[in-house]
Image (cartoon, rainbow, N blue to C red; front, side, top):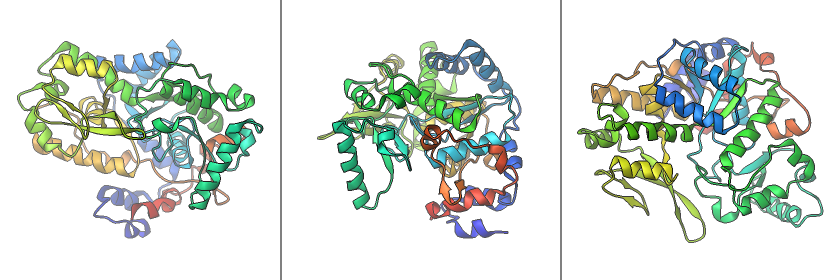
Length: 427
């Protein structure tokens, strides 16, 4: 059956259309199990240290940290499709369900979420998202905030937007990069407007702590309840890559591929090959709000729409990283995870396309680095939607209504059932 392939714009999604065509009749359990059927790899100590540092900062226990790092060398797989959010929506819930269905129950489900996005991105990093909850389930009914949210929801609905959410981010910060942002008085006040019952069920928010760590703890707690599984662990993948880069730059090993990307004889030629990819992301202050800025590596510096860091040396780049002024972007993140260290990065339909693009360019460029460049688009796709009597699953709704979902109940469903609902997005 070639139903899915025939409905996709193959020119835009050549790898996705091949996967759809090849596996659309395969049962979820079999497809999911293939995602974790990987050979062990030797992961750099710098990357393991970077992971452990972030896991410790999130409050993971020492046993989980030890086991997760050992697992990653034996089963080198991280789910990287997610954005940092305090509550997932139906799409990220489906990705988790698809992954958990075939994952051995003795293994951790490691989710490296992307913080290199604005709070207002389509996954709503800065909001609690829900579907059929009453507003009083979230906010005190007699509060001024309650009336403001009712007004905002009505305005969105009048424009045809029926999404329900409560933003935890002040207006001026909503288009700001979420990476590295501390919990301000404004964010804390938004959180404090939640009703006491809900606040008791979510992780406690603390001023001047990183917002993304609070959001990841919230999301992880909800997903663990929804799937009734304790092996789900969320973390900030961009922060991990920053931790890693700091170590590499401090060593100043001129033979290391990552060091050479920024400070080598072939740096200029490398970035000419990958010139469509920003090296880092930053934030600049617009007229009404902060904005995300893409920073491209050009002539030994970073160039953006509003910001320029010229004549950078390792010490200067280190300083920017340590001050969280810049966030590792897509290319450098996956170059380190996938191509230098050999970790399989599960992702959605866009990710399998741009990762294959990067792989082909690395093959053609051939800089004599010892990289992991075997094609694996066949077993890294996690995308789709799952429904309950025609309605999508919303994790926060399920969490507050004490409802769970078992991935094994979908084991025998063919992949076409999950992929068919997203075809419209691909054309």
